[in-house]
Image (cartoon, rainbow, N blue to C red):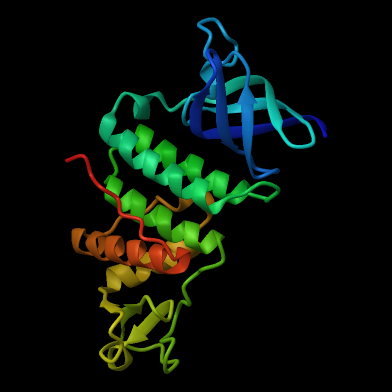
Length: 242
């Protein structure tokens, strides 16, 4: 209990009463917290900017036995380019919802927060294919949650040769012979094979510093969606605006 100084990004916001807000904040050190922001909806409130969706801020939070209250917030990044672009906002909203669903209080979530911020920056400041961004994000999130695919050789027979399938059921690569016998296996190109290894192992700040063919992007999109839903036991379906 007491005063906590941290950083955090707003994952969800909802109105409470006439002028207050309840916000869900992802922090690096105390996980995801639900926090009351008293007076945040007043026109001149110092909490207004820092309690908007996707605002990343320096925070001062008061922790009591069963609740958190936001004392102050100083915005660091508000991702304005996402706010003004509906298409970008839809992708960012889906990504932030995923993060909301897989995090909880009292977790060390520094790496997940780092991934989220890096991803939002790429969406906000570049014209990189957003379906590609989403695929990379989903796969890297699985790695951070402990669901990293087994890399480098066939997960069935152990052969490092002729790797040309990815098995959703067995969480890894399959050679040509084993892949044809696995109904969950997805045939992949060498480009996709290399991309999957890169996404899972690249330094955090460089996970978007590569490109692949359009064919590989489609394969990654299929794999990332199926792999995410299999490991989280959910049925997430991203729906585009256009």
